[in-house]
Image 1 (tube, rainbow, N blue to C red):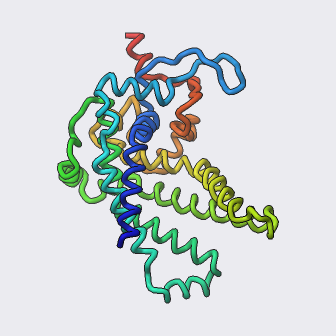
Image 2: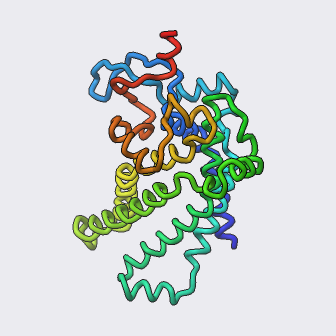
Image 3: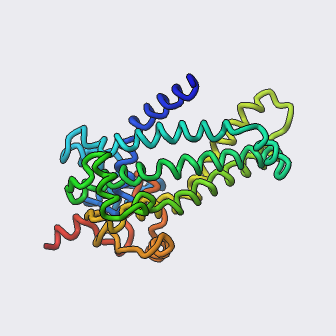
Length: 292
């Protein structure tokens, strides 16, 4: 019990600290660019026009809504973090006989990964309604709406307008991304630890922890499109300006969203908040205001 409580507290602290970063990332993912690009240099030193990075974007939010504005959507996100941590921990504490069955079918490594997959999936499924509300609270910044002003009222609004399915908008790509990321990370880490690192090295344990971190980073990069599509589907056509044209058309499904993003070359939009090159042929809010 004490261990679960400490995990919840740690997770809540990290959630608060990372809230401004996620807020900016979500607005960029939606395609909201309120600031014009500036002339800068890329990683190779060549002059290019770049869209504002994390700090410039955050300053703009503070200018409009104050410092507290950086923490919109924090309450439902804290709920999601706390509930997800508890569910994940409880699912991993299933009876040992379940673990023995899995080991008999897939071996020890496969069993551990399978149990982690089930735990993550259960946590994602149960907390996804809070995730949807978090995203919509953030996207309200674009149209200055107050539709999702509270967690409880947001639940009532979604149920009234979209029914039960509204709470699970974007769930499928999110689940697929989590599962693929987990298996890719563990498979790559296993291959590196087994074939690339020599046994008997004094720093073996430390090296294996580094390999886990590196493979986790690459796995998250490869599965980022699932995160992007999931977030876009969670806010698409929900009555907020950020989920409608000119930011996004009404997608018929997450596959339709994926297809359109791929066609536009926007599958990595929001993946990096630094050195953001202006995409060719893309129109933004600041351009529309300039040409009026």
